[in-house]
Image (cartoon, rainbow, N blue to C red; front, side):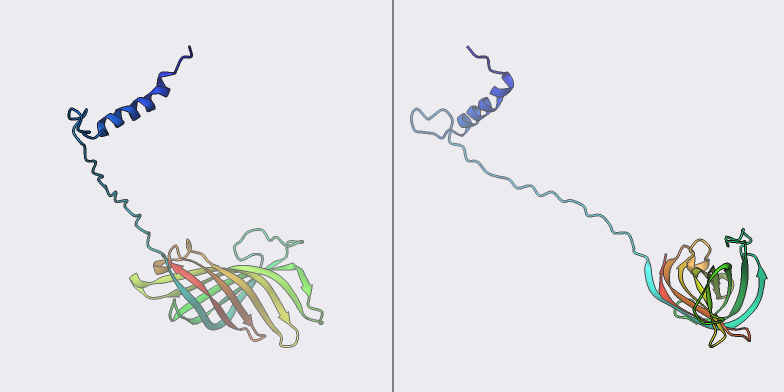
Length: 213
């Protein structure tokens, strides 16, 4: 005789018990049990929804300004070792005033390191492009409302032989850790351009996006 595992019999016993409980009154000696009416009860379970975290405020960022090239010296602007092939780098310094959709009327200063060892010719005599990077700070407001927006810039710096103008066309990223006031811990990116003529006049323009915390 085959043996049945007790666990396998449990479902059948439960079904048999359920049949007896639901057996209606057949009229023969009153049936085994009185007639049972089954009523279904619906229970609603409320699942709490997660509360969304507030999103950072993202705004269009536009900078336009003018100023002057205030100085130049050998080496990098940061004081770090120059990465040029022969260790040749120059640091350009700028400052001026600007207007901005986010920063408002403010002053700006910039330092740009140029790798003068590894420049390439544009094909025209006197025309060449070098790689450069640096930091621009725009400061606005006074006292407790003072804020500084710092951006990192990197890209080619070219000398136009036709117009005798030096220009930097770069990408920029907002340096939230270096910024302060309402721009502390901000983030953003965009395109940046600055050029200076032979007289030392400088002009800048930038367009991008900034997210304020």
